[in-house]
Length: 229
Image (cartoon, rainbow, N blue to C red; front, side, top):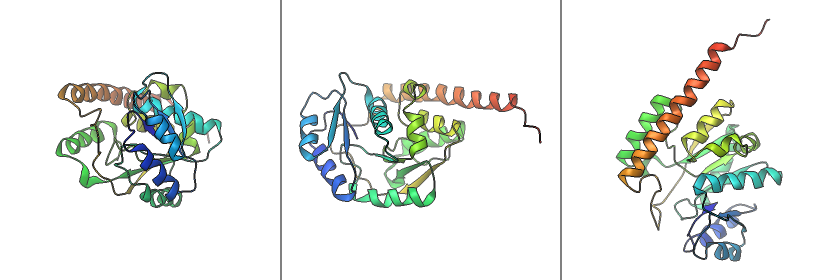
């Protein structure tokens, strides 16, 4: 659970996760300037505090590396702001295990704004990814996905959405989705959709990444000969 300045909600989310699942809860405190770390620890979470802000993906990758080092078979990521409901986690985990995918994304399509629907349609077109919600932070990752996302290559990713999914697809990992219930965030706002400037920066950066990644995959495909039978 990546968290920055979420002291008002992180404790409730941690307790909710512990009540819903018999699992360890890890909070990556992304250099918060409030009492996020103390509240999370008091609620029962293991807390890793980053010395400087890395953003949602940098904090999430730190959690992936912790999970890999401690030999965890699966990781569930969710936001600390209360928009993801801990009581939905057993359902999402069950869908992941029964579906046999490497990654399962929890989605709530009715919460997508018109702007997001348009943006996601655009990125589905240029990436070929059949994903309903690219920015959902509610995900279940299997061991293969954890290993891929803990790698040095994954450290180059800026956002935790499309870049992560393209990397996983390049490694032939299976991505699935499962419906879930979500609420509006209680505090703060989206990092990506906070202003027209950040939206434009995100769209340009992600478009370049998508074209570069897809183009690299296609070039490798053309240059690879089929093995002799």
